[in-house]
Length: 596
Image 1 (cartoon, rainbow, N blue to C red):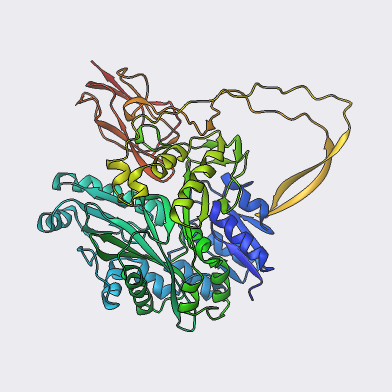
Image 2 (tube, rainbow, N blue to C red):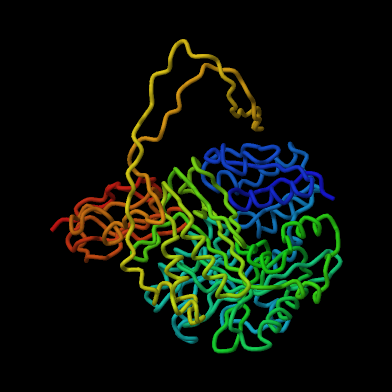
């Protein structure tokens, strides 16, 4: 068995892996950026090492710094989590060349399946039908236009080395291709470190169904369950469920068998997910994610299988503990996972909502589990993914699971940031979801969130007080860094009163804060175009003196790894541009001024 695991990630997944390792008696090592110095995953790990930097590129995507932490800690294994380096073959190879176990698939399998283009070829070898598209990287916008004209619009431009909807742009016509391709490449580079893209036909009303597979180093591969992940916004999942409901007889097993064949075609081991698009009784291979998925807990909930434990044991060389028939025999009931993201869903806009979490009360009860990466007092940064936590609920059947999930969401309280909870409840309460008539486009095209509003809650009064000179000494705990390694220490210091958070900005959710008008901000029609959240200006879309129409995009803002268009709130002439590309701005900052 492995002795010490370094988790090359942050947030909820780092916490998840640390807890599984502790249950196996394995020591854990966290790594952290400057912004994550006191994050939950750092606090609960046995050891922690500083990576420096703030952005993902400066920290969690800094290969040499992470490798140095592996050497300094003496870890004999690395778990990459999901995102960051989880599907990076060069990183996996660098780990294994150190003589350290990589808790994931072989680098060669990551290369072939992590590249969405070559994975399509591998799926064909395994006999799985693929969505019509290219089998080479797109080198120019003209190539994509040619494909769209020949195959039909819309088309999807997708990151070749990514997943989770990051670096994906849906294009409706030839005139939008150049900007969409550039946007997809920017997002892919920011989130995955690679900017190659490819193109495929975008189906009009599909369901997104995936198959959890896991294989050992002896060559055995099993599929564990299907999951339906069709409730999405911006091509990123909101709600997942297992098993995938309302499939015709034989389709689930056919998907499972196709997934196993695709995995075996590349010599796959450890956990992975084969994703399919399903429409009108037919399914098509979409891609393979060569890592643990965010939604893996719904599979665990219906099987009782700890997939992270299996990952660790397989990385240590152990064989699969169950046969295919034994795995399928464990399944019972239905499970739903809700991703609770720090986004404001008012009006269906899903604007990122970074900031401090002033209070967090998670639900409990029979069949309820909450996987979180934050506690009250922690802060959700604009520089990282905005997943606050995941609610996983089991029920004896789908109807029970839906009702229990609604109750659990109603019991969840978050103060300080807006979350997707109101939108999640709208989805779960809708007849289309209950009847499985939704698709990957349903949330954005048919779910009516126009009346969804959010409200700020009053902040606490500042109750700080002056310290008494004669107050006694008390024992305090703190953390220090010595040569980049984190230590927890205790010391005796003069007692000081607690300082409570000042007023303003606090949110209580179930209800969340308002969305700025017009996608831009400021008073409607004022011409003072502001940004609704902290972020980085990616691109200026207008020039001084240019005439613009109300609703026309004026700048692109990146926040929490997502690009957001900031739109004009009135028609007129651009009289002032107050920002430039690459500049960091805060919520409420004026970026463009439009005159009459």
